[in-house]
Image 1 (tube, rainbow, N blue to C red):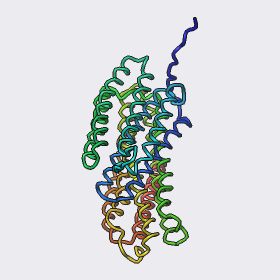
Image 2: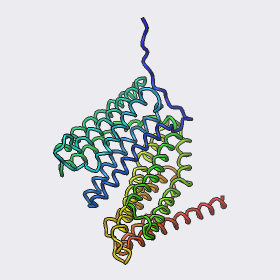
Image 3: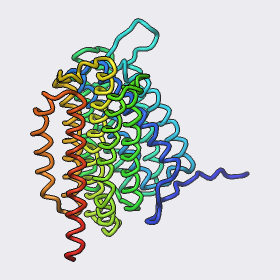
Image 4: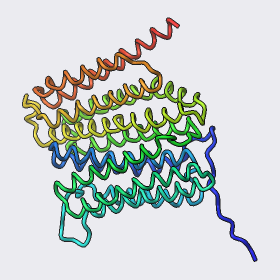
Length: 399
């Protein structure tokens, strides 16, 4: 009688790099983030901005879990591939219903409940694939079971909130995230899990950030609609593009390579590498991604305003909400960059000055026309890039 052999996970090695399948997975996540921008742009209120942030936390945490998984076992092989493909489908469904995440209708499907169930599927599939990948390691298997306890407990307020709707939905979904994330941190306090490939882990986070930057241009450009032949809209689009290039430079030139070197130089099984991966990448990259999302929302709103309300060029301010998300997004991005630098290369004390300047410019931008406010922010980012480039050149000559 023939015996059926159970397939075993293919463990990642130190030389492993990101696969095309993982990049495909990241694209689906970023699609969800672009839907978030559209959701917040429809009703720009503090409550909507918070709800958008809450969903952003959900999706980032889910992506981070799969990023850790892909650093343990190959994501493009066997049951892991099947599980992640199913998770991608669930993320895609969740992304589709994001604009109606707090709406109730009389149809057969409830958007909030659909979103909640899709998210539960994403998290449940991760637990199943994680259990499969740790089957040969009793220590990690026990950790996965502890991790699963808080994750499944969080599904209760998630489902109840989707059923109740309104304020209760916002409150309960906040509780669900805190239980899921907080319980996960407690469960992995003794060990975050082995980082088998430092280069792969750094590359995955860099790739998702650059995809977010690229998709932010598409989402921001959607605000222009069909009126791209007017010079104010074209100029605003150029400003937005230049500012995005500056954000790219501030992370990928100098900063990301130096941080990746620190991560890869740490011993694969050391506590130092685990903490770097958890704090500098999983945590500090959240404000980087969130900053880009809110910055893109600000560009989207400016382009839409210049298209629909040309009087903004005559001197009428664009309002506190749009100004806050535009400048606040850049400030949050710089905060994430500061944390990332402090946790890896231990430097960049002057980054606090840059963050302070952005916040001081916010009330100034509030009284400027939309195009001028965007131009001011772009000029600041360009000046910051030039300053850091000159500073780096001086240090290189001195050494």
